[in-house]
Length: 69
Image (cartoon, rainbow, N blue to C red; front, side):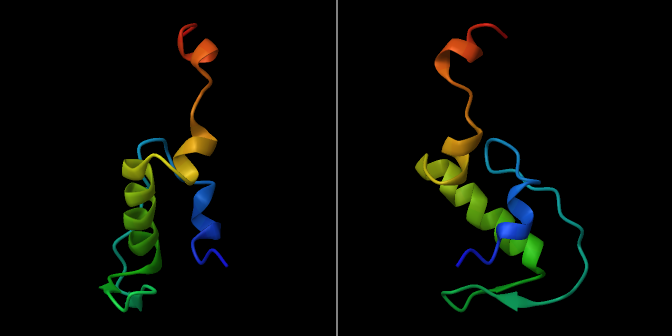
């Protein structure tokens, strides 16, 4: 189960996710506490983007499209 599924549509290439700063503490699967769920997911997406997998792959343009821009 992806506990960040509600934020995936807001995710930008490079692992960026714009979040508010409300205080609603939540813990990730490793037990680490985050200020709120969006910030937890933003960190998760950033790590995925750095690894070059997961969400980033879905949002990447094919090489043929990148050359047209």
